[in-house]
Figure (cartoon, rainbow, N blue to C red):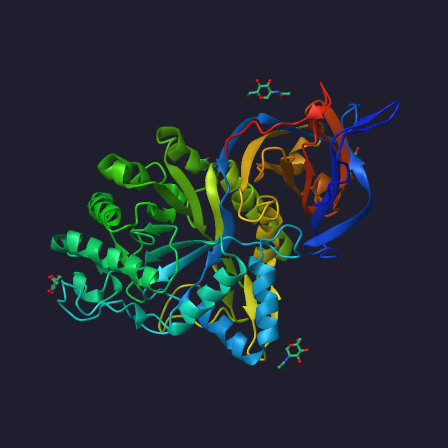
Length: 509
Ligand SMILES: *[C@@H]1O[C@H](CO)[C@@H](O)[C@H](O)[C@H]1NC(C)=O
Ligand SMILES: *[C@@H]1O[C@H](CO)[C@@H](O)[C@H](O)[C@H]1NC(C)=O
Ligand SMILES: *[C@@H]1O[C@H](CO)[C@@H](O)[C@H](O)[C@H]1NC(C)=O
Ligand SMILES: *[C@@H]1O[C@H](CO)[C@@H](O)[C@H](O)[C@H]1NC(C)=O
Ligand SMILES: *[C@@H]1O[C@H](CO)[C@@H](O)[C@H](O)[C@H]1NC(C)=O
């Protein structure tokens, strides 16, 4: 945030080019919780000495995908509970919403930037509904976007009022019940004769959001198309059927002014990366921009199975939930390793948890649902008395988000850059590295690291150990000792040490 020097500072014995002034930290013992450390003196990059126990090497000659953001789903339940907070204690509501979504550089806020919104009922809705529940209305004359609760749209508008860049990704949990062989949104599949009709229904959903002034970034055809439950909205769709709907919807979107909206497939577990996700691309790859993954089966490295075969298609990580009663620090380690560092390392543009807000019991839920038998934990807990708290899901994603939110209002966002970790204790750190471009090409690029130190069990017993680390960048070296926890820090690419000339923008954003 601070740019201390307009020109490189030259000292007689040492050349300082890059400096670290900005550090955000969450520690295992919660003594720091997404805390901004106020450094009185910067950490300088200097001529390299010997390496630390761990040695982070940032190599910005290789850049990868842009990271569009972190967040969760604004389910009907999340919107309801946030809207209740707005009524009970509007000061707390706006404080919380800004803490979640304000992406302003330097703000004490996570800058969450990616929101998934169910189209119609999900397992976190008050009742079963679609946007057209008139049986047999295949012309969708009775389509009504206001079948969704008004609080869904009002809370979404409040989020956008705080963060106008927020990306909204919409998707249904089920087609209208009358379009399915089951006759209900709970389970079953779309009647095979209704593929093109269903594409029209999805177009009408996009038009419904448009009519409310709500921009949509992406649409998926179906949440979890291999999940069939008779107790909550779900629908199965074979890859070939999803492909046919996608092809029809893509054509409609292109004809009705939604050319820029991304079409995303699969939106289910990692273990389908080499199966359904590939089958879908083979069936209808031209229609789809990419696929999305959830965490509930398989593992994050399987994203590579898809990426290797379809390197030009996009990957999104869109859902994982916490369960009530699990261990705070163990969760943070898992989330960083697998999602907020891991999924991004495996080419995802996003990292999302499930519900944005629920109460302390993981409620409210869809009546009769069997989802989340242990209770789903949301990103934030909101209580009926107008108080709230943020959970481990928040701290994990906030640390990651801070590294990629735009330096300049309006963007660009951070891009992943190549990073490796050496040294005797290389395995104690998990590291993501990002470069954030600037509005003006003469401004310094921002380089950020998200570092998980999970060295909490040396020699088999609990004893959290800080790790003395060197950071290598463009021939210079900085030193920092990472406590057990998650640390986000950044510096600006102020000069090229070889020439001591200001760095130029060498990457297209
Ligand atoms: C950085 O990455 C490039 C491309 O992969 C490679 O050629 C170069 O040797 C790397 N530099 C360092 C310092 O590791
Ligand atoms: C809102 O919450 C704050 C902090 O918990 C409290 O100080 C304030 O009195 C509450 N306001 C209302 C209207 O309850
Ligand atoms: C969908 O299939 C179900 C079961 O075969 C049938 O009852 C229903 O009428 C069909 N819906 C439409 C609109 O064709
Ligand atoms: C991830 O999944 C792949 C494919 O099933 C498997 O080969 C690999 O061992 C798994 N990795 C881990 C760490 O579980
Ligand atoms: C772990 O054990 C080794 C070998 O006994 C010892 O050298 C090292 O200091 C121990 N590490 C910690 C963090 O206790």
